[in-house]
Image 1 (cartoon, helix red, strand yellow):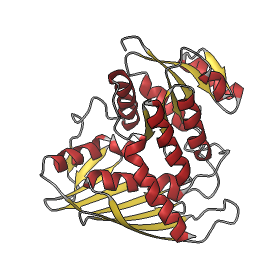
Image 2 (cartoon, one colour; image 1 turned 90 degrees about the vertical axis):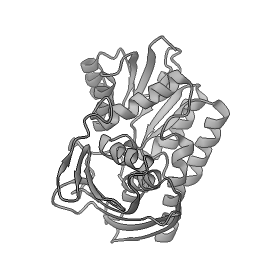
Image 3 (cartoon, helix red, strand yellow; image 1 turned 90 degrees about the horizontal axis):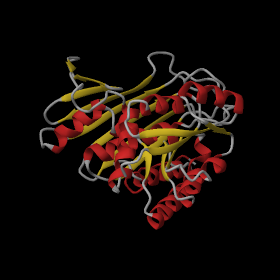
Image 4 (spheres, helix red, strand yellow; image 1 turned 60 degrees about the vertical axis):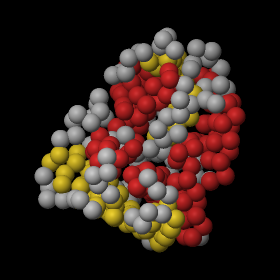
Length: 317
């Protein structure tokens, strides 16, 4: 494919805008359609990024012959059904995390992906952040092996707001959304499947209907363990902090920054062509389409993570 890849992007909120910003740095890709819940707000974003077609209906964009691929940044509960709709319309698709919040829906997505042979990947951004890539290169070179990952995913979210401080039309979830990042990353970095998983959760929020605190333990087949703490109640530094404890060192990853266990900063600026994990994720998606290959973070690669989340959900119930 030497012609530009034409993309429809669904979801003009905080995360959709991160993708639009990243795509501006990628040659040979053009966003031609923007789908959002509210037409006026979506048109405002489309005008800013020079996107001609605006709609509130995904099927309208899927009907456009020129659209080669779709990026879904929509509410969690829509991810699996919309991914299936894209594949059935003959479009390559990248869906933001999580792939699903019901495991059998994820299994159906994999079945249809195999049937169509289209490129389908999930936005497991941690695989692409330069800080985690640096650690991954060290592991692959045989210079570092994980003994334990200690991870904290902390937010202060007592009401249903998004990253831009706007009201959400859907409810976020510690297990199916935020834990998915770490469950997948742990197995990916270990290069070993998860064989044991335990979880406990705090009280269910009276209006949001979700647990606001959760603790998860994981063990990989190679013996490595992971301890993950998640909270929507944390009134302090927000985000996710990863401590890699290994046989030859300790590393702390904070988004795209990396430090030794002694807080010495590691330069990760040469790891990839960008320091932006979302942009790197999008670059992989478009490269896989052009090269006709399976992308990193494909449906097949990440589905085991959702099996673990499903098992943990059963345990918590």
